[in-house]
Amino acid sequence: MCGTGLHIYHDTYKSYPPVSIGHEFSGIVVEAGEKVKHIRKGDRVTVLPSTAITCVICAYCTTGNYILCNDRRSLGSGIDGGFTKYVMAREDMIYKIPDHVTLEEAALTEPLACAVQATEELTSIHAGDTVLY
Image (cartoon, rainbow, N blue to C red; front, side, top):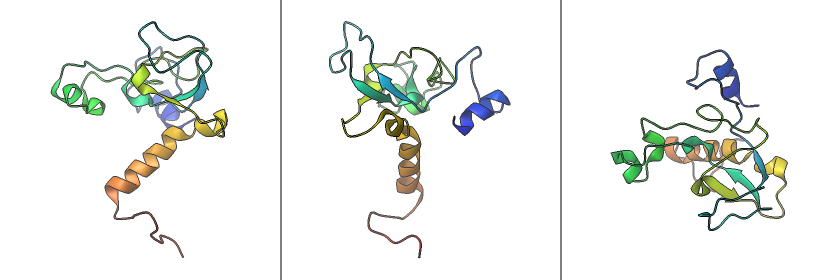
């Protein structure tokens, strides 16, 4: 369970109750919609949970900056997340897991992505740099 779940519990992070928490998860696809092209039943997947719902028409959405949409809702705080029996996600939020990666490891994709993005955007650290002696 992520710290975000605790913030939701203490009402210090915006959520839309009643909502099941959980945005760091992976699983196996049990059904895909008829318009879905690249994800199939049985695929092992993880998700990008931050843009489960967006308006699709604002300046942010039309330029691909969905994370800044004022109407954005995330899995696990805006709509039901990984602690439900089934999670519904848009195809563009779903990422297939390579065979050599376990579902448990894949559940850590979102926190890893947060750390990598923060490192790339907020520091001058680059691949190959020594950061700790």
